[in-house]
Image (cartoon, helix red, strand yellow):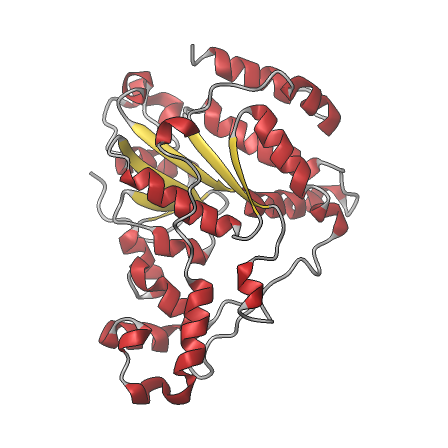
Length: 325
């Protein structure tokens, strides 16, 4: 078993080896082949070992949109980011992923906007990017991927809920949450529920969370409440930085357990920010992991790929599905 992970960057080959070890899959490298890259295991293991992959679709859409800009010089392809996400998901399937779910923000606003007026909104999102939100959901569904398009809740809440449901299934050996979002660090559990950052090639388990933030995963909402999260639009408590927050939480535990004089009149504000930072894990997205098994593309995926402008996606999906039979 690979020793407790820390938040480190590794090259693709090392990432493959570490993911294979993290899942507990054993075997000769020649047997595991490419399927070890994301810890899926070889065909012998697939039926007995279930590894669930939960993908932050909104983050991936942003990543591909701005990544393409480096090559297109500002001339955005209408569905370029959607195609990028589909290629990434198909690559995971081709390399052995069997159980997948993608969470998206169908709209940016959520119940948190009613709690804090400065919470993030869709304002400022480029129209060319925003126009690809719903086509991504439709394309993923056509590919046969389970999609959770969130309205009242956020995509992060869906990932947290899906991770909780999957982790309760005794057949699931590992849950991989594919996002670098620090909010999701609160969902990490030992080495069974981990964060995977595809872009930076980082795997983060509970020890990795402690190494990065100085606190355990369960205290991440308290940590973010104190230091703030500029991406989500709340500032945290003035005068408390990352090191100070980690020291306070290590000494006292949750914010609710702080002595009254530590935060003083700022306590209620800190508790509000903690509520913003705490992900919902009670959304009834699915009953068990079997619902996440990829069974191949729908009959309409060929036409979908044509509309997106990349007909090569369809034969790739068909070929990947044929290997599962």
